[in-house]
Image 1 (cartoon, rainbow, N blue to C red):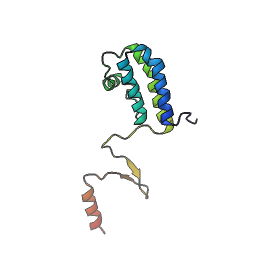
Image 2: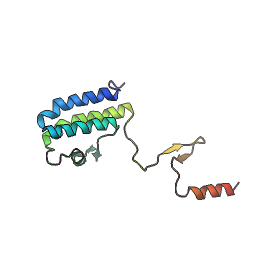
Image 3: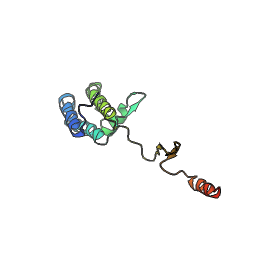
Image 4: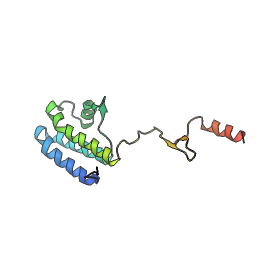
Length: 134
């Protein structure tokens, strides 16, 4: 199914309207601003909401939004559909799941073997052995 809101700007506007309608009535202005900017940043940086064991990690969300004392069950119920929509949008648009810094991904080489993007510590030894065997 084609993603109806492929544009990040359009989706950010929809999430902003969602926050205005669903989040603003159940929280303070400061918490609303923090939650709204957090959700918009998830879209801008193409990052899925944090999860733990398949569920949203509310402790991390609260710490990131500086909401430790105001993250009530009612506020969680108000926020969850928006975070779920962000995760779905990222998955459907194929833009989610940025690589964590320092983690090298493997990619197939032209001969079909897997090669590291970043050289390993033992790479100089492997190069020396390969040139010695020629």
